[in-house]
Structures are given as structure tokens and as C-alpha cells.
Length: 187
Image (cartoon, rainbow, N blue to C red; front, side, top):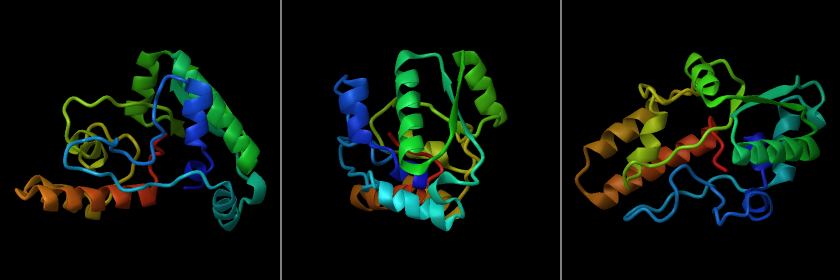
């Protein structure tokens, strides 16, 4: 959570990427018909520092260096370097960048051989499940190690709900739960 709060997403898209991207504060992007994603963590370096201090690492002291794995891509490098600097500046954390070819990153991801992984996802269809199903405990795309029976139950219930308003509400509860747990950091 501290790592997420230390990222200035607005600056990242406006000053670093500069391609018209929108900052991501949730897993499901805005604009999907019938669904409004919950508001996830924003940029709050003071809260990030307080969380890190409560975890026993004031100003990053005592925290071993972290590794951020990313594939060979100009945009991934830009994001990785910017995030590395934000975490250093805001939290005092030493982050080592590990750049690998895409095939190697996929292999490392499947094997769970990473501390932090920079990745992206493109939707196949316009529905919250295209993003939220990734994080179910039984998903072959969930490489985080995060598992939540409550999240799984909400996703299961939403998949069996015909009422679109109730279905969206269940997805929002699931997404809120996941954003609070912070196994991934939308940027």
C-alpha cells in the first residue's frame, strides 16, 4: 500500500509517458458501460511514509533493496525508472531495476520468480470481468500469490447475477477489497 501511495500517477502520464494516457486509480478503467470503478489509492506520500514507518522501516531504513522486473519496452523502462525514483525520493527505498526480454519475463512471472513485476493488460471485451477475473484465486493469470475467499465469492456471485446494477455493485465491492489489499498497483 505504501508503494502505491508513493506513486504520482498524474505526473507519470503527463510528464513521463506523454501519450494521452489516464492515471489508473483502480483495476477496471473508467468508461466501461454500466460500471464505475471504485476510487483506489491516490498519491499521498505522507501516508505512504507513515505506513512504511508503522511496518518498521522509517524512511526505508532496514528494508532490503527491492527488485522491479520489467520487459524490454521503451515505455516500461520509462515507468520503471520513474517509479524507482519516486520510491527512492518519497520512501527512501533502494529499488533495483531488472530488465529482461519479454519471453524471459513471462517465464519468470509464471514461476513466481520476482519481487515486483511491471506488467500490463489489454481487454478482450468491454466488461469488468476482463480485468477482475485476473485476480481470482483460481485464475491462471494471477501471478501475485494473492488469494481472497471473499473476493472469489463476490466474483462468483456477480457472474451469476442477472440484474446489471447488482452485478456492478458486487464487482465494485470485489475491486474495492482488492485495492485495499494492494497485491497490484494500478498506474
